[in-house]
Length: 358
Image (cartoon, rainbow, N blue to C red):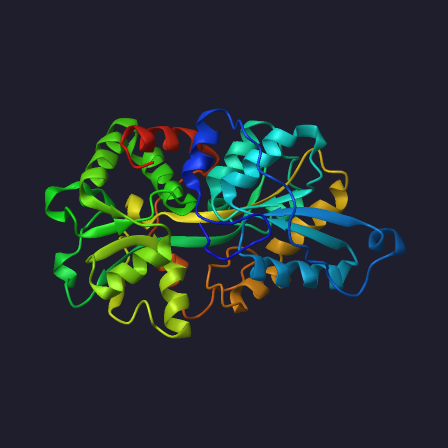
């Protein structure tokens, strides 16, 4: 889960989100939100420039604003952006149903997209847009597409651990020798997406056993930044996070990462899971054609280049745009094949609650 403040209250409140998830998304979150409206009409026709899309956004607000501002400049289609957390907004969409004002939904992780898709919330993505995104970053049902990605990593304190000490698999963190030595942000959408990959790859029985081991072994923190900081200070020796928290800290000051390095599990391990950020056109949106244009732009060369050049340091995945050169190349991650359409957020929350992690 991103820890950037946003239009909907964007704090780390996953227990509430989890409860809503298990209770069939009972309580809708409050509306409201920040607006990001693009600039000049650019190449648009008068008809297009009169349109304003409503974007429900759970990705990094600064990044998405840069992308939609350029989209507006190119098309004249304005974008009213309301931001919040993955499941917070997914639950909102489910509760609003046909009354939702949203035209487009963007997330940081796949499970929130699957949640909306399970309620038949998306319109089919245009074929031209699907053609811009490699199959591994597109769910098998093609109801939405990936437009960015983040890699699971183990940040470790290089003064406390040597390479030979590191676990071969993320599953090894449930073993007794790791008790009290590592941290997780259990309540965040990021970590829950990682658990969803474990569930998809290893099955329910193995996931239950692993989560019980994590309950015994792991120290729980509120957010990936807190995990990284605890590793850096030596409070814990390692922590499960997404790659960009470390890369961004190193690019800025290194204040929370100077004593840390990253361990990439590779070998198609669940710990090498690459989570995709989703983009989908909502079926009940009033501006279907324009919404499809936005998704096409985000996955097109211009949108992907904005992502690659940004300090978000997430992976570009579409239109053959290389990721930021500071990142370990995607092709070297040796990630497992996971169908994003099969990531079961509600089941993950249920299993994590049973294990006492939520």
